[in-house]
Image (cartoon, rainbow over all chains, first blue to last red; front, side):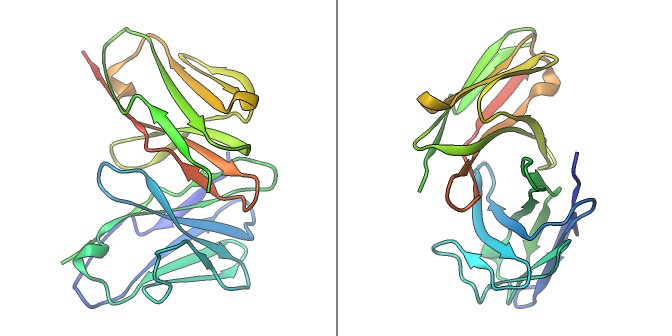
Length: 114
Length: 109
């Protein structure tokens, strides 16, 4: 199957700092990638759609200035959590879908803001 | 937007038992997937099943797109089947994958 790799797997940062999470499609090109957020014992909530070469599309209620998304190549999308606060602590997962196939997900990044 | 409902929300089984998980969706979809989320958070693709029936070992799934539901069958459950099972659908408009709330399964030895 197709492989989506996410890095880092976990990160601890101090309140007020920024954290960047990378999502790579290893064996296919992805013009579109998706970023999700999951709180403990809850489902995955779509945050934004990352579009290669253009601005990301954010879901209602997601702060675009807080969660910066860059999709500079066909295999890489990044999510930067800016000025992180403890309430941003969560599990972040990206996904991508090869042409005419199902969605594949990265292994996720567990962010803890202290 | 499209709504995805899963039932039951929680399920406890004795090892060896069979179970059926259900996913209802509110509108037509392009695709439907079933996932198992392991304790480390990794989503494991179980089935890509926009319609019809598929089987993989002890697991099988059926989607009836015209009636907007899908079923995941787990036979002869094992303790390693424990975890959260998610149904996710791709809407026909924006190719977004929307998740249900999940079914939390615990299999007792």
